[in-house]
Image (cartoon, rainbow, N blue to C red):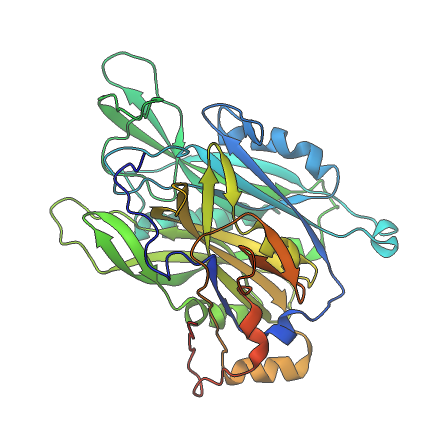
Length: 426
């Protein structure tokens, strides 16, 4: 049941994940005044499962998430779990999405404060052409800023493709990804043999906002502005399919985090137009939020994480690490899905995602250290990815005895050259 995808054979591919940070482990583990609580929810556009909720369209998410909003949770990121970009057929779970919700842990102090929970809104914006381009995304950011002047905050977006079958048969389910495939999508039945249809793509960008009742919005949520930032990656391909990627995540984002901005969304132009040479790099745009007040600079953690799907459920993902980092005040603001797909040693489908977290810099010393240089570390370990999680030193250990993805951050042995980020792979 390989779907023509190679297994996770390289040691780097089989690691639970790589971690990049502007801090070393002792600073990452520093307690802050804020502790977050997360809820991770999976939604499917093609049917419900024991751990997955069915929605006919992602535009139904405000209603589906309302019970969590009444408890103080808010949506921080939404992303497809599987991208079938560059493939001639869609993969299983291509209609599976992850919503990440967060709230500050309730305390006596916060309980006594007047707190206004926002309302989640979603808008459908039509797109010209058959895929995203730089000009299209810049126009979208302009439109987001226009909406923000009306007192709303931009949360993120998901590209959803509505395809009509030309032979008069029923329409396919709505399909979403950051950049839609140029090849006609096809629906895999139970035996994974594919039906041939001709599709006419109709693209809609689902854009999510938070709004408040008049006079109830937090002061720093009014008058937000949104800016674009460069996103570039070095990639390897097998044919048209992206098989691996590398990016200088901290170098790409550091200047914006130093301003106190938040990374809230990303767009990558995964597709290569037919007839053009296959590029060795890919471009895109990050979207950053600038608050109306002057927030402190941010430190950041970036995680390249494998998500493994066993049967019809997510077996392994960034969840355990996220819950651990929440104890130290780290807020997830964006998840970048990728079309990199493998099978693990047990034959389960695995895909790579990039997770971005941030936390306000603590103290003037931390500001000086961060402005002097960036310390980056990544860990490659374990031959397979396991759901079992134990804890050593406060961080998860993946797969029975393998060192934590953050375990070597405490060594203090990473002193990059002045002004240059460095990645150390173990």
